[in-house]
Length: 187
Image 1 (tube, helix red, strand yellow):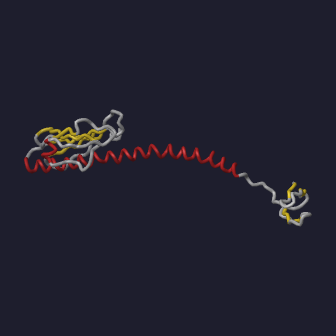
Image 2 (cartoon, rainbow, N blue to C red):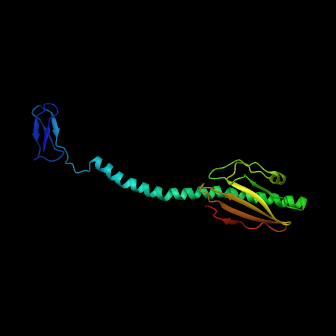
Image 3 (tube, rainbow, N blue to C red):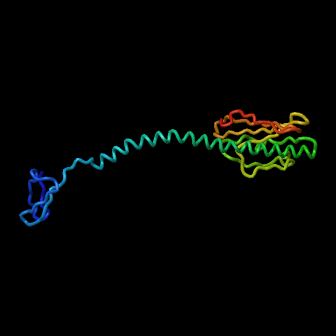
């Protein structure tokens, strides 16, 4: 191995000397024999990291994104159950005062597709005194099945593909409100 003196530019063969050994150049400058390489060059390390990290990030994204979308849909779908229970409670209260249920909706006029829309109560929902606190992602309706039974229905198209989910909740005049019937809840 040949090294060059930075002061006088003289070249010295250090092949027979040990790594780290010091010696004097003819100009008086003290030189040191460099330690032998053998480490991995930085660019190789960067390439290895990129080759390993990028596919790993891709795999993690492939797993995480669909799960995140499902989580969002479940959160949005919770709106319909909360609002339908509130409508059922309002129907029970209305029945207690008037000895009959009231039909309402469908409101909004068409099923919302992939985004929330304004809810403007019709005559039936106004009589119930029910109005959601914010825009809705579902269409709500109360259907009468007879003088002592009503059904609260909710339709929604969370992903905007034209396939609507459907929720039903039976409200009897006596006894507890039934269980939700769900058809394609997350589409």
